Length: 249
Ligand SMILES: NC(=O)c1ccc[n+]([C@@H]2O[C@H](COP(=O)([O-])OP(=O)(O)OC[C@H]3O[C@@H](n4cnc5c(N)ncnc54)[C@H](OP(=O)(O)O)[C@@H]3O)[C@@H](O)[C@H]2O)c1
Image 1: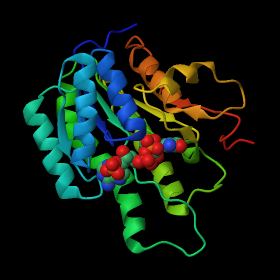
Image 2: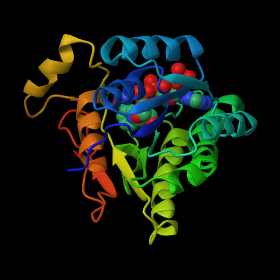
Image 3: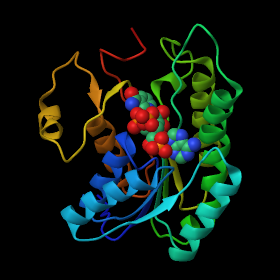
């Protein structure tokens, strides 16, 4: 197993939910984390939590993935501060639930631009820094909605399409980066209970029974497992199914 100690890990959507859980867990595992997202106050709160747990205050970088100029500024800021990046976690994506009335152009642009254009440009901007790493990984958080023939269920069509595109981005990067040290991995969570490593629910989640919902912890553990594999193997796609919330029933 490879050690994550002192790895530089950049996480998008790190201010809440799964992104915050990933950031806290990666910091606990010894990474120097870079917290990226739109909401500076939320990022600062996660940074303070990490400082309390590890003694290291992470830097925060404001980015709106739906805004290309913001993405360019953010990747330039990160590259100047950290010429080498070991791990990029493309977690940030705008959720859009299905509704009967349809969607505003702003919502459709927001979903597609953040998940697809933003994820691609953010990754492209950090590729030179990833290429300098001895252990570079790109992890894209997809969804079981992203899988071929996934049922639509309560998901809006724009979100469904954006998640399918994110799976294609991860696969395209995997092919483009074949023959280089960079691995491109895609992790597909089911519907999740939003729990944090700071809560007792995190410990309790390890005792869940078959049929219960997945949690952020299940995704965090899958990511940690994937990125600590020896470099000759690549867990290119990890699908996390759960009986309640899975789209396979
Ligand atoms: N929760 C689930 O059940 C589930 C299931 C499958 C897949 N996923 C995926 O897991 C990832 C995290 O989901 P989540 O449930 O923790 O979060 P969420 O509640 O859906 O919020 C999305 C995250 O992405 C960020 N984000 C949204 N639009 C953004 C933008 N334009 N620029 C930068 N950041 C943006 C949000 O940050 P702000 O604070 O800036 O809004 C937030 O951190 C997403 O990719 C999601 O699709 C989640």
